[in-house]
Length: 129
Image 1 (cartoon, rainbow, N blue to C red):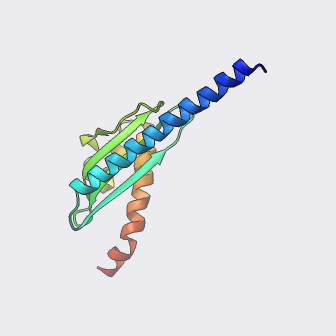
Image 2: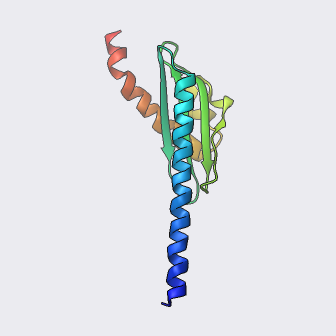
Image 3: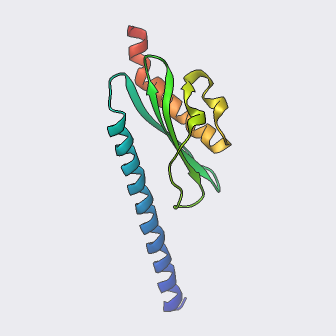
């Protein structure tokens, strides 16, 4: 391997690392923004993710525990580090039918992951009520 090939390889890794960092920073910024906007009693902010060979998805769900409904949903899906969160009004509504309203398989798997987090966070409260 020549030094030029090694330099190109190292530069590629550096660029990929930079874009991965930017995507993580964007994720953290959106989570903090939604948490600040939806900061009220009886509400959970949960996230779920789904990995795929080519495409993945991440969802953020704001869940009203008292009514068992999703009041706000954002999803990021795609195959690149340029994917962004977008509001997904089709995911708002009752928790029981949430998985059936997912627009794609990846979002459906991410929703299922988020719902397991909801059940973990509300397990002790439901039995005590």
